[in-house]
Each structure stands twice: as C-alpha cells, then as structure tokens.
Image 1 (spheres, rainbow, N blue to C red):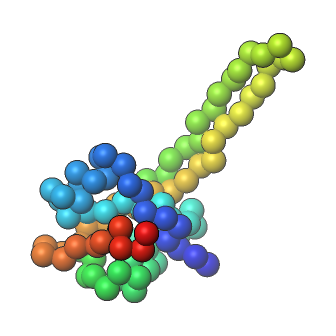
Image 2: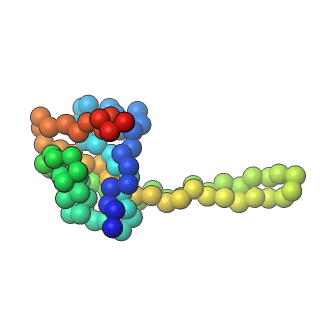
Length: 96
C-alpha cells in the first residue's frame, strides 16, 4: 500500500512549513497516523513529532447546459499535516 501520494504545496501549507515546521501531504484514505509517521520518516529521514489527519469530502457541482443537467463531483481525499522536530526540514523541491 502506497501511503504518501503527494505533498500539498499551497500558500497555506507553505506558511505552515515556515512558521510551525509542519508539512502537508495527500495520503491514502486507509492509512492511519502511525503508518503516515513511519512513511514520512522513511522517505525524508526526519523525526516526526505529531500527525494530524483530515478527511476532505468531495465537492459536488450541478451544471445547467443545453443538453440538460450535468452532475459531477471531485474525489474525496485524506490530508495529513506532519509536524517535524525543531531544526529539521523537509525539502519538497529537491525531486523536481
């Protein structure tokens, strides 16, 4: 099971990484906090203090078009906010 899907790089996540030393990741929906902690420590070589998880519900939209009403939704994801110990950083831009 692939636990870490991708890092979340938004304005809010970037300010959290600078001020709180916390990084956001999109993770597998079935992963728990212990598995997320072990995956981050193995992938980036840092020690994790705290893991907070968020289940993001799908966003539903209805469009009225010439051909009729179209319903759609985005996929549900799980986010993890990982706080690493003071003085350690995760370089998310090194793999690009």
